[in-house]
Length: 288
Image 1: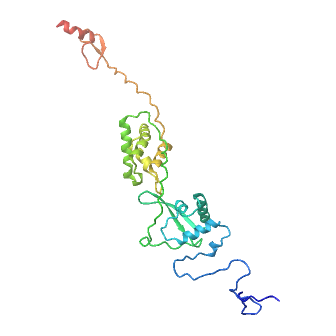
Image 2: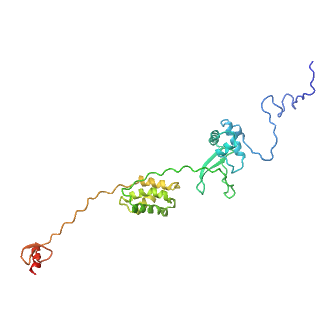
Image 3: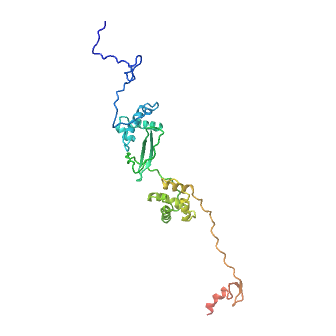
C-alpha cells in the first residue's frame, strides 16, 4: 500500500459532480493571477493584444503608445532611445500599426515654419472622436524634426542683354507681385534668381503690366508652398515668342519741288519758291 503524504494539498473538488469549477486550475497552459487595478492602468482591447497579423513588436509599441500621456514624444528616435530595438525595427512596427489603423501620422507646418509630425493613437481602428476644443487641447510636445533640404528652384529663361537697369526693373516688378496676392511674397534670393526670367519677357516687347498680369493672374486656390518655384515654372512654360523682325525703315525720299525760272539766267531749276538758281546765287557775293 502507498503511504499517504500529509503535506500534499488535497485535490480541489468540483461543486457540481462531473464538472470542473470555472476557476479551477487547468491541466496545461497559462494561469492568470489577476488583481483589480484601481489606478495607473490602461484598457487594451483584445483585438489589439491578440491581433492575428501584427508582429509582437507592433503590438507592444501600440500598448506603450496607448498608455503614455497626451503630448509624449513617440517618434522613431525617441522610441529607439527608450527600447532596445533599433530605429529600423521600430519604424517597421509603426508602419504596421498605420496599416491596421492603430496609428495615424501626418506632417504639419507650425506657425513658425517648422515641420512636425502629428501622431494620433487609435485604441479602436475606424473610430474617430469629435474634434476637441483647441482651447482645452494640451500642447503637443512632439520632438522637433529637421526641415527637409531646400530644393533648387527651376531654371528660368535668360535674356540676351543683362544690363543692370533691365535686371533692376525685373526685381522691382517681382517685389510688387505681393500687392496683387500676398502669397507671392518673395525673398531677396528668390527675386535675384527669377529676375533674368522676367528680363527675358521684357525683351520681347512686353510691358511690365503685361508681365505682372501673366505671373499673378489665375493663381491656384490651394496654398502656394513655394511661390518662387511656381513663378519660375510660369516664366519658363509661358515664355512668349520673340517679336517679328521688322526691316529698318527706308529713308524718306527727298521732296521734288516744282520747276522755277531763274531770275538771273532764266534757266529752269527746282525750288519751292521763285528765285535764283545755285549758279546765280554763288555769283552774288562776287558781284558785290
